[in-house]
Length: 109
Image (cartoon, rainbow, N blue to C red; front, side):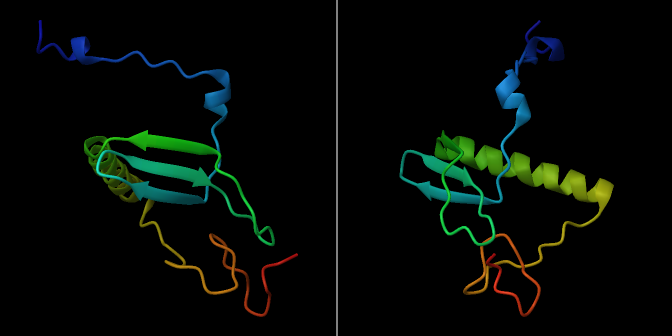
């Protein structure tokens, strides 16, 4: 039956390495007419250099579908756990990205 929900299920396997996940506190997004490229990295206090830990490349259509799915999941999360507060939209000059050192500290070790 084509409309049977069970016929639309996808069996997805997650390898051991992928199941561990990769922590990221910074995503760099670029695009061309044909694709979106999302590079996941992480910035650490006092470390001016980082590397890309994962790169995801998708079509514009998949990027828009991903945006809608992520938005839907954030809404569901906030209904269950409360509003996600964003402490700072943009880093202040001299402060590392993704971190908000207490006032009077430079954020460097």
